[in-house]
Structures are given as structure tokens and as C-alpha cells.
Image (cartoon, rainbow over all chains, first blue to last red; front, side, top):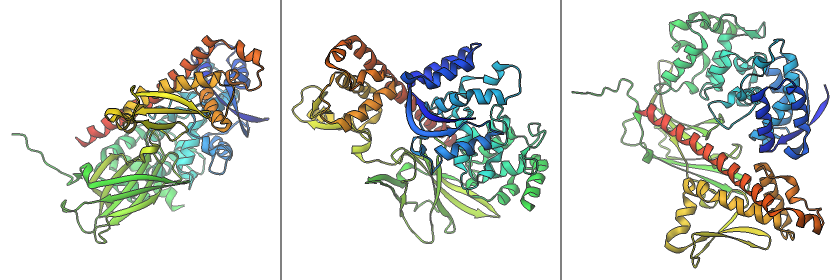
Length: 246
Length: 264
């Protein structure tokens, strides 16, 4: 895939992209391609990005880190909504093609997947900036965030929603614990059956919300956290202990 | 009779126990802290930790402050590497380790540090001055190619407007943005070109047409820009500015309400 000069949408550009995502016209891919090159609604940034089809969210985050990470040209701009909306539009065709599902409406999905709104409760769903910010929040040891980064970009899944969706869980030892429990490092994939209770990500998230005001879990090690997890997580705790022993 | 039982022994600390402010000196931002936790009967082995977040974001830092044995009551933390050091939220935790568990025995959440007055709303490039003789609450002046917001010094208007960002940002700044946009579109002199470029970038970012500020237009082309077009673009900028800031306000108040509920 070619290198592409990174631009940013103006607010009018973001709105135009949002309307395309909402209306999902048949020719949406060509319309988005036109939009990202339209001078009147985009601004030059000076950065260049190699548009490659990412294997998963981790792969995408690493590619973006080159440009938006701490050494990247656009690091100071990395919180800008219209910039991310342009980047997601630039990736639109690549991501559509990398998703084997036949139904394009499902592949596109809701507006939150492509358009950042600045709403803390929804922005983790953005398909392109979501993996980047999960990577950045754990940039000291990004592999510890594989619970948020192991899935395909267009199908993040339940675990990402539960962990990335809560800022107390999205970094640090709790995120690492979720990775040890639900991610198989040998297969580089999430463990099958993880959404089935007991001990599923929904309950994991509930449990840490429950103890937030009685325990300083952000200051505990994963070994200490494993000790305080209740019995309904036993199946997943065993996986975590095995991962730790490696 | 209703009786409250505190099963966890946690103390929800009042805001008064902490003083926090951020100062910006050149390129360096520093968070200054002073706390007074005496009188709560905390165990001498307990530790004091601080969590720093940027408002409405996932950006997070955790800092060890002191233990009760050392008796420290103040600290300075370099927050230069945070994206927006003037928009931080703090959580103070008193933590006691017991049987491999770090128990939260004291908690103060969602604390907003003070920021330098001159940088609350003026972090960018809008000059704000006080004029004690001004009869209207505020007005715009454009001297030397620099838009300046003049606030009346009468009846304490200056401090009321400038120190209260919840009134100042949604109430006045959108109209300031609209007026400066009209001026920028009609200004041919560009006496301060560096500053003009910053305003131009802001307006385009807010949705104005780039052609409105085209420096290469000849006199005839410049005159051909219709005033209605200018007004329309200025209104778009003001609306967009207003939309962005009201959204931030909503997020902040939702977060505050959520924290209050948890405390209850």
C-alpha cells in the first residue's frame, strides 16, 4: 500500500464524513476517498503514514505510534478530534477490505466507530484512535494491554468494550491482569468462551468498580490482585497464573 | 431509627484538606500540593498517594507523596509531560497495606487544582485587558493588528467575568470569536502576521472557508467577498466554538455528579 500524506479534516470535513457513515451510500468507499483529498475541508499536517492492512488492533497501534507516538511528528496533535476522523477516513477502504464479512453495513457499523465526538464514554469505540490510545496508556509495556489489542480492528469485541470503556481499568495492573486472564500469548488471540459467565469481562469490570472505594487496586501487583479476585474467576485465574509462570 | 455503619472504615476527606495549584513557567508546568490530614486518626504506617488525570480523558499518572511517619505535608510534581496541565483532576488516597491488600482508608476525589488566573481562558492568543472607564461590560479593540478583549473594570466586572470560566467561555467567547473572524476576513494590513496566522488557523479549524483569508487576492477579488459570506462564516465559527465548549462543560458536570453519587 502507498504512503499517504496525513491531513486533518476541518469540522466541515468531519461532518461530511459523519454524514456518509450515517447514510451508508452504495458508493461509500469512493466517496470517502474523494473526501480525504478535498482541499476545502482538509488541512496539511506534514506527516506521512504508510497505509497497511493491520492484522489486529496491536498492529494498527504500532503503525500509528510511528507518527502519533512520543517520537512522532504528530505527537503534540494527537488529541485532535478532526485529525483522527481524517485518519479513520484514510483507513476506511483498507479496513473494509480486511474484514471478510459480506454485509458492508455491519462492517461500517455505528458513527462512534469512525467519528470521535470528545465524549469520554464513547470515544474508546473509535476503530482507529481506540487502539492507539490503549497502546499509549500502556506504552511502557504495550503487550500488557493485549486484552484491548488482540482482536481484529473492525471487530473489537466485548473485552475491549469492558476494559477500554473504563479509564480505571484501561491501564496499569488491572489491564495487565485482564490480559493474563483472557489472552493466550502463545496463540496471540483471546481465549475462547471468555464472554460466558461466570468470570466474564462484564463481571470483571463490575468487580473492580465495586472495590474502587475500598481498595487501592491501581497500586497493587497482578499477583496481589489475583489473590483478591473472588472464586467465580477461578477458571481464568488459572490461565493467568500459567501465563505468569512462563 | 436509621443508623449508619461504616464497614470499611474509609474516610471521605473534605476538600479543605488539600491545596493544589499548577504554575506554568516557560515550557515547564509544576503542580504544587499542600495537605493536612491531621485529626483523622490515620494509622502511622499508612501512605499518601496522588492520582493525576487530565479532565475528560484517559491520561493518568500515579505519584507517591509521603507516609505519616515522615510527616511531609507538601510536594512539587512536574506535570509538563501531561497534555493539558491546566486541566487536571486529582484523587488523593490514604492507603494502608494489610495482609497483602492495599486498603483505601481515606479518599478525596475529583479535586480541581487552581490554575494561574491569566491562563484560565487566555492560554491561546487572545489578549485580555481591563479598562476601568469602560461603560459597557466588554468590547473588542484591534490595535496594531492584535485583537484585544477589553473588560470593564467598573463594579468588579473584570474579575467576575475573567475568573469564572463557566460564565466566561460559553457566555462571551463565542461572540468574541464571531467578531474577530469578521475583522480577520476584512483586515488587509495584517500588521501582526504571526498572530494573524494563529487566528486564521483557529477559524479554519472551526469551519470557516480557507478562501476567506487568502492573502494573495488582489483588491478587486478582495472586494468581491460578500459581507454576507463573511457573516455566515463568522457565525459558523462561533457556533462550533460554542458547541465544543458546551460539550466539555457537560462532560465535566456529568463526571462530577457521578463522583458525588459514589461518595454518597
